[in-house]
Length: 495
Ligand SMILES: [Zn+2]
Image (cartoon, rainbow, N blue to C red; front, top):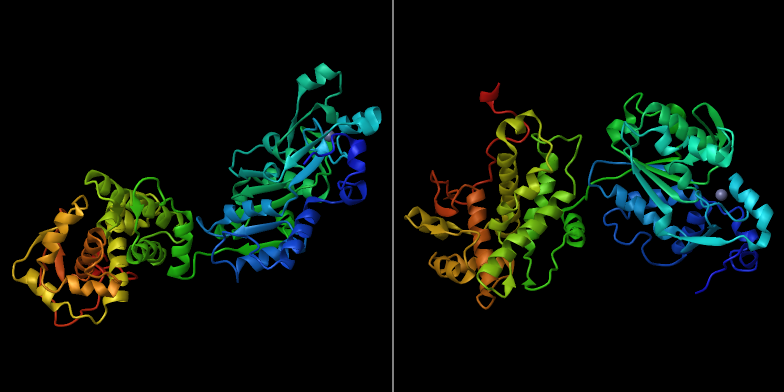
């Protein structure tokens, strides 16, 4: 599609003056949103679990033409939602070619463009920005300066052009003016210094700002969106009141409400479909990985204020699949089937994502991580095997049976040893695995049973992944799962 190249052509096109002159970014977002609402499909494809909570509030904010802020802990897809706003921008936006602040051809705010149009008229050249180019993102940090965000007086520009300092022709524009007619997203807003917030507010409210004492008029057209940690945002004095007052909507994000929702987010985000070998990802492995995050979010040893990002299960999944892939490559197995042992091997993808409280620090990230995995296994095991009689399997170990299941062990060999455990293989029907299934899946499922029994302390397992009898005889029947310590109480010996 060829687009108009000059102002004269532009006037006669669908980018007419009557349509574009007063079409501000927030009008454009609103218009395109209204169109999308009339259609049946999702408003923000790929945003999972927010359909009844966050998404309707965002829609209302955009319909209201608000600047808005997303308040939420890390890994709650805040940046992703903000970036999804790109899909509500026009595919092409005309501006005066060469303008640093993408001036509207019909209503330029910079002097350079006004002079240019006065001189060239309808021959003034037009350029275009795509929707992607109109999304500007900035992570707020305390060292962001007015110069970086809003602009600075450029003495060289002044000398070269023979302008006065303080003339708008001498301004070196910062990020915000360069985001004129765009979406400008500021992440972690409370980290922005107070005087920068004032500058931001002045631009939003008055369309002018002082740079090094010179008043500069900048009636910018920007859709401002923000994100912040809720506690930082509501803490007194972190956000200047007039700025807070100008943010039309405060929208709270959250972690997935159910394990199922978490699983679909992780499935969407994790890189698991790789070239080469075919992957079969058992449902119980997905569930264990997802539950690690759910349990961590409730764990007292982990800092609630930071939260536990959805990136934890995503990275953990990728790492677990890699461990299974490594095994398959080594043994030249056609099928990659992750096992619970691979989840333990993914510990490096977990520990870095936990902000530990004092008690957790004392135990160490590895210990806390392993305990989370184990709890996740116990819960997942219960979903499948609660009430199943596992006595025969436990007895096999009690009578001195031992089996090593290294995470690097080839499926064929492992299966031979696993078949020696009476009563084990016919339990696998509970996870949908039968005798005709492939070797890799059989091993993975059988190992899940053993890991479940270990998580419930009914059998033992060493660091070298040798399963043995448990340390003490469990009571008859299914003993309730016990953590190494109660989750919400300190152990008495600690007091
Ligand atoms: Zn301009």
